[in-house]
Length: 287
Ligand SMILES: [Zn+2]
Image (tube, rainbow, N blue to C red; front, side, top):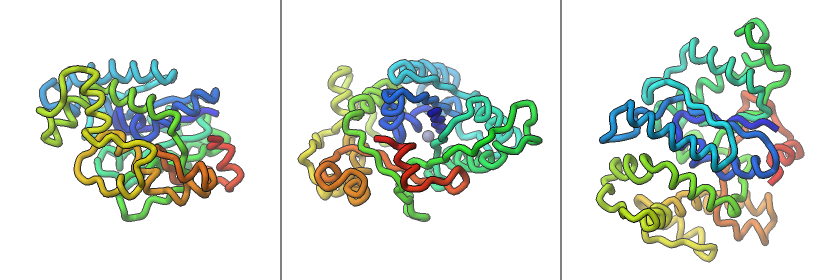
């Protein structure tokens, strides 16, 4: 299969879909990341140009780690809108790759750029198969499956159609986070007022990034994870979906395995793409 993950920014695909991406690559599928924005907005000290250049280098490292192609478009952060030109650009881009599945944002996510990207994917969806639209690139013969990755918004509720065990990919996901230095150790701590808490030693800061003092293990209960409030390490962030969708995990993997999964990623089937039966869902998500 060819799987196209479309984020507004570098780190969206990584943090929301990185475990699944790694699983597909290891199973022999082709995964591609697209960041529709150039990342210029994500720093408080570097200039927009320096931030874009720094993030491009970090994304190249992520691509190398995962073994994927990673495209970054030239649209400035906070400046993407669902206009006709961008929609046509996206239609052409998707057609040229011809993916079996697209994974992107819902329309309810916190950042305007995420919502816009979700809208553009929806707007492009049916038109991918319409030959007279963007006739310079052949229309797709089959509608790809479109999935949304999970966000924390409650309305409308996120429907966890598939929840994937990523316990065996969590170290890859932590490494991906660690590669995004200018985000996870600089910009994001700044936005949370934590910039003075980041250790300078690379090993210490990596531990801080993961746990921030809450060293969760397989023995930590869902209740304990759900009770952790405030800004947590990535171990807690990446563990929240399994705690939240325990019922779905047990349905999918059975009581014994499903009750012990610590890290998971959840996806919702988008109604604008190809629809899947329960059996087909297993073929697209064979993990
Ligand atoms: Zn983002």
